Image (tube, rainbow, N blue to C red; front, side):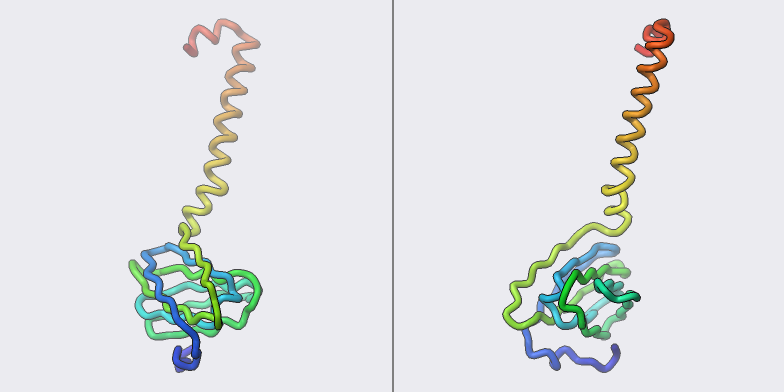
Length: 137
């Protein structure tokens, strides 16, 4: 939203520095608005059907009061200002990029599963032909 100013929010603010593709995840009930002080941001708000892109100087009001708000830096570095809700004990988590999260949640377990499967196949082959055990050691 262009033209929206952070001074419309009479609450405290918290600034965060994010490097490229790092995320900041905040409980939606803790914040009222997000402003990009530097860099480009990609914002996902639980319950919204679309994401938001903010360039430096732009602000986005956060209407959600439930769920999470995830902010990701699309620039090599970004500075994010978050307008807090009154009395907010801001609980945020700076996390990995989507690619890093995908690697940790899908690819590593898949690799572990495949390694276990390969070991099982090798054991089955040795069971069927014991001569193979000499060539595999």
